[in-house]
Amino acid sequence: MQQRRNSNVQGIDVSRYQGKIDWLQVKADKREFVFIKATEGQTYTDPNFTANVKGALSAGLLVGTYHFLRGTSAEVAKAEAAHYAKSLEEIGGAKSLQLPPVMDYENNPSGISKAQINIVAKAFLTELERLTGVKPIIYTGNSFATYFDTGLSGYDLWIARYSNSRVPDDQPAWKNWTIWQFSDAGKVPGITGNVDLNEFNGSLSDLKARYGKEKDMNNPFDGYRLTSPFGMRTHPVSGEKKFHRGVDLVVTPADGPIYAFVAGEVLHAKMGITGSGFGNYGIVVAIKDDKGYLHVYAHLSAAGVKVGQQVKRGQLIGKQGSTGISSGAHLHYEVRKACTPQFGYTATEAGVVEPTQYLINYYGQTPVKEDKPVTTRDINVPSKWAEAAWAEVTANGYYDGTRPGALITREESAIVTNRLRKNFLALIAGTNGDVKELDLRLKKIESES
Ligand SMILES: [Zn+2]
Image 1 (tube, rainbow, N blue to C red):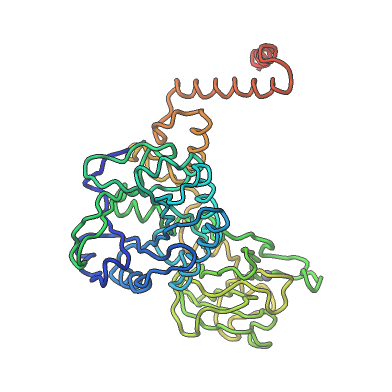
Image 2: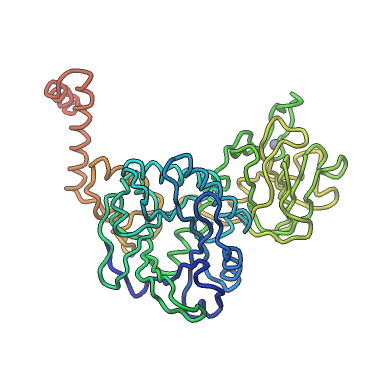
């Protein structure tokens, strides 16, 4: 794998073993990010978890968390993911942190098979992403990483190898590290004793860009199923043709967590009373943003915030439900132009805006953008958006796994096109004749076109 670089941003990871930490001193020592131990197994929570998260955030570090995986079956792995996700909800949810949650899978005391290790890992990662809405990353050791198959290549790798010069080995699933834990015996001001040292493969702004929330805004409702758009529709309960004032979004499970799409002040957090502007809306959390627009989260089964509270973007604000007049568990989300009177309610569509466009405009995001100009980017690292496709196309043998971000040469494109052509002929021939005969027919088609 690749060497360290002087320009790479530095960080640490901690658990209760580091005791009480002076986070301002840690930050002053240019440690810009931290992964904090959250949970282990199905019931254990690190006693310093909440204090560490609060302290690190208030000192201005980028914060992520990790879970130490113990399970040996998919079922137990899922239960562990649920325990971890629940602990994250207590600090505002995974989306309220800048760095993703982590599966720490580093040993095999009961000696399960390699295949079973991958089953357990995938079950945990999939369940954790479903519950938190954030794609996790994988922490493991240089030796243990050899157990993971290419099905995990799409997850970022945080790998331990305690050396400044001996880089982590190339692995079946990864040729590059995203984060390298290069020491378990670091000395950092503000921390008593040893601490693990980590380096991210890039600058501080690269780290923010990789896991930053900005990119979410290409689809503001990522993680939700949109079941009813904004505009005229036949109402699912009353049957009358009516203007739908917001969008209907669904998460699983039915009482799944709802996070704030924008930051702001909570103006309402209870059952909507008839005549208030929220009649029939069920339990409503309403948040006023800095432009004076009111964000309405309706039909909740519970509100998780209080009136007067300032909430951050991505903060947990309640649970999905079907309170009020609702055809089933969903989130009705609408954006009103005003907060008064009656919380900005109008009988017609005059008082609301289309929520998707509002959020895209609010975050000022252009819909698609290349990560970096080709001339300045690291050609050994695939673009974030291309990562899954790259993993699949290399696993399938069309590329050799090197130079994912480089300009393609004529030779390379010739190789790929030819492999595709041969494989397709073989595939079709498998059910439909022999390759030679198909090749002749294809040549005829090619000569005519
Ligand atoms: Zn609705």
